[in-house]
Length: 133
Image (cartoon, rainbow, N blue to C red; front, side):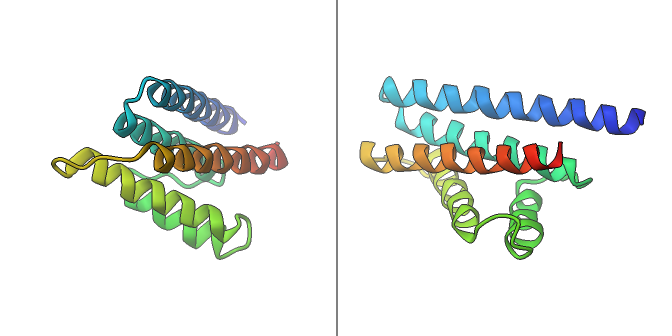
């Protein structure tokens, strides 16, 4: 019982971080800081995915572990539509580009689409968490 309560607390913590990161992404987008908006959009999804996977008893220390589990445990099983797995990959790859490639710049319309993907992904994770409750 205590372990389940502790897990539930950590899941709630990750979902708060997801919501905060999504709010930050919106703020960064509004301020025109597009690379930071992409970063925060990705991390919002990463935290939400981590929360749901933890609810399933899975914990990862690397982004690649979470990314792989999204596809292996959620998409392949039919729990999560494949379009959301692709959206997560798209955000991951763009976050990598924005954070690590020199002189890489995003266009506003491109980032607006990524922000929508992040919002949709998190919405789907919240639905899955509600089903587990």
